[in-house]
Image (cartoon, rainbow over all chains, first blue to last red; front, side, top):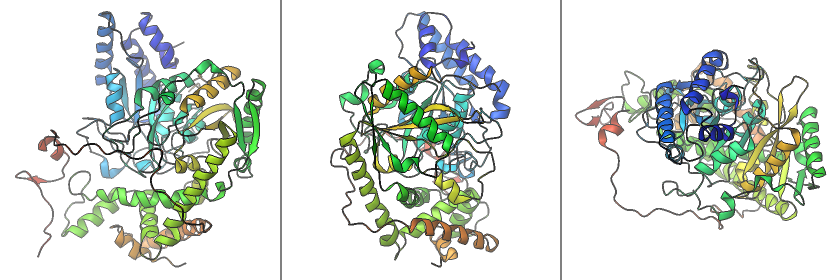
Length: 486
Length: 89
C-alpha cells in the first residue's frame, strides 16, 4: 500500500515509529499528483518546494526526539478561498487571479503550529458559488470515481484531491453544502462544523451568516483530528465561539447503544433518487441493529429552505462582493475614463456568470420596495427552521438524511439548468440556515459504482456525537478509505 | 413580475450586454418565481443567538501590516498612493 493511500491517523503512527519519513510521505503524494493530476485537475497552485522543505523540517524535529502534534508532516490541501500568506489565493475567479494575501487565515496558522505540510491550493466554484466546480474560471475538476463526472462543489478540488490520493486531508468551506455534497460525490467524510466553531478569519466571505470552514478526509478519525486542530475561539472572528468542553472531546469507540436517530420524512421525498434513499435506509438499519433507536420525525419547512437560502446567501454575497472594485487589490480593467466605469468594467470582466447572477439576485432582494417581500420573509423562515430543529432534537440525538439527492452527475449535464443545480442543495441548506454541525459519510454505491453519502446532523456543538455515530457505521461497513483506480 | 435587469445591473455596478440581457432576465424571473413560494410568517426573528452572543475583541492599538505588504496587491501605485481615474471634474 502506497503512503499516499493511507489515512492521516496511520501516517502519524508510522512517522513516530520511524516506519517512514515526512519527506517520503510528501514525495509519495507529489508522485501521485504527477501520475493523475492532469486528469483530475484538482489543484490551482501546487506548493511542492515549500511542502518538501516543511516535511524535511518535520523529519529533523522527529530525529531530534521532539514530541510533535498529530498533524505534523501530514499533507493537507487548502481550498483556494482560504488566505495563505505569500501563496496566491484566487477564489477560482479572474478578479483575484494574481492576489497574494499578506496574511494567513486563522485555520492555516493553527495548522502551521501543528507543522502540517501544505500541498497547495485547490479548485472551487468561483467564490464558492456552485455545486459542481464547473463555475471555476480556470479549470474543471473531475471526479476520481468517474472522470466524466463532476466532483461536486463548491469544495470540489478539496474532495477530488483527497479522493485521488493527491492529499491526505483537505480544508473546504461550506455555505449551503459545499463540503458535504462533494464529500458525498467523492466517497469521503466531510464535516460542516457548528456556526462559530471554526474561525472564518481569512476565509474570503461569501455569505457571512452561513459560511464555515471544515475538514475533508478518508476516515472519521482523520476528519475529527483535523477538526480538533482548527476549532475554537479566535479574537479575529467575533462570531467564533469559545467551545464548550464537551464539543472538543469525544469517544470514537463509544458506539450507538441508546442513541436516538430521527429520520425526517421530508428528506426522503420524490426529489431524492431511489438508490440514494435505499443506501441511507440500509445504513440506518445497521445502526439500529447496533443499538440505536430510530424514529420518523418531521422538518416541515424543508420545501422552502432552498428559496430562503438563495435569498439570504445572495443578499450577503452582494454586500460582501461589493469590495471587489479594482482599486486596492485584484483585477482592474485597463484604460477606464472615470470611477464608475472602473467599477463596472472591472466587475463585469472579473466575475463569471454565476457570481453576477447571485450579486444581481442579492441586489434585487435588498432593493427598496422588495426588502420586506423577500429578505425579511426569508429571515422569518430561518427562525422557523431553527425552531423545527430545536423541536426535533428534543426527541432525538442525531438526524439522518441523504447528503445529496443524487450521486455525481456528468460534467456539463446541468450547466444552464440553474434551478436544477440549486435543487441539488435541498438536503444540505437547512443545516447552514440553522447553524448546526453536519457530517457526510459514505454509505454505499449506486448502479454506476458511484459513492452515496449519508448526512448526520446534530444540535450545536455536538460534533463529538456525530463522529462517534459515524465511526460506528464506519466499522460496521468495513471502512471508507479506498482510493479508486485512475 | 417584471424585472428591470439594466437598473439592477447599475445598482450592482455590473454591465450586462444587451445581447445577454434577455437571458439574464429570464434566469432572474425563474429564480424569483422559486423564492416567491416562501410562506408569510409572523415576525419573530432574532438576529443574534442568545446562547452564543458575539464577542468583540478589545479595541486596542496594536502593530498591523506594513504598508508595502498591503500595497503589493494594488493594481497601480504612485508615491505611496493608489492611483484611480479622475473622480472630480
